[in-house]
Length: 198
Image 1: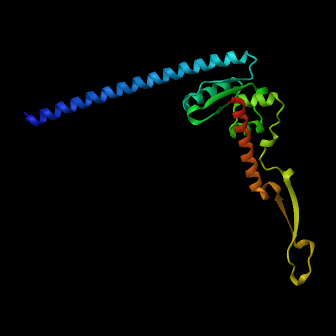
Image 2: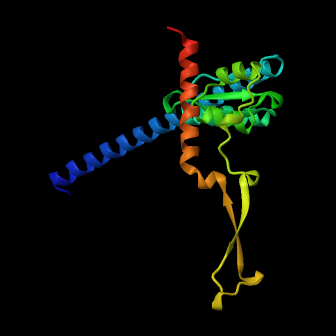
Image 3: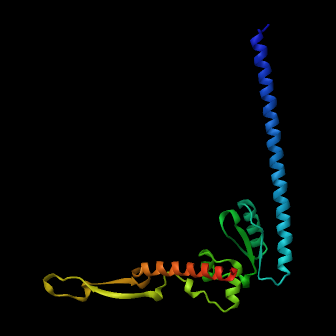
């Protein structure tokens, strides 16, 4: 026969085992509920995209959501043939969905990255804005070839001793570009302030 200590240990083990089973059952229930919620959200996204497909609206925006819901919305939109991306501040990121012909081009995307909103983008687009002032990317159109001569031995220089190097006006004037980017961001903020009014 065992002592009283064995009885107490056996009882604690049974309690621990019961608690472990309850935790496991609770975790499985939470996972099932989360999966069901994701499936419901996916169905809602599909229904929303079907309505958007038949509309003439240039874009559709889902409500701000967490990363999991944004991924679901973007994946479903892309599978339906739309172009989708997230935009906004981290806590308020929204998935925007576009028809292929209304999606932002590279310069318009740069405008959005610099703080513009999708609504402002479409307003500016309707006013004829080309967004070319937001082009801060390097281009070979901005490059020129500069021939530099090396000092030759004996003071005589041959064509083999010449080096060519590409010098970019964009890179050479990096501080001017940084100023242009800052100025563009300021213009966006000023435009937004002017639109919101006093």
